[in-house]
Image 1 (tube, rainbow, N blue to C red):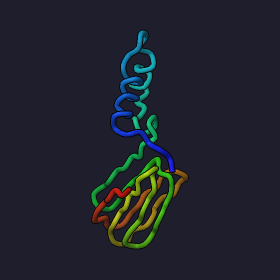
Image 2: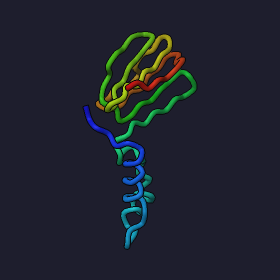
Image 3: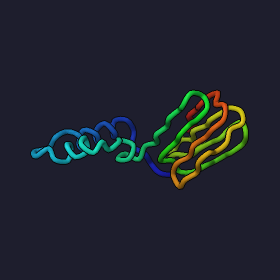
Length: 109
């Protein structure tokens, strides 16, 4: 399993990357091109659309798949999605789109 930075480490990394340096070019580039933090810091991105769709980007893999539960791995965490008639409308190397009637989302270690 990968070791991921804790909140203090992430804050230091953000400060180092996003605070303007002497020339400020790197920080300006991230802002201009709207590069999301999750792509820089290897974080997952989760979007819920009502209770019918979940979009998960930057994941490591699928741990469990049943009609009532889907478990996704990301580093030291498991993202568990519970509901009814759950399935995948899109599967890619590091992202998934889950559809069905989502009742809850949990993070497990």
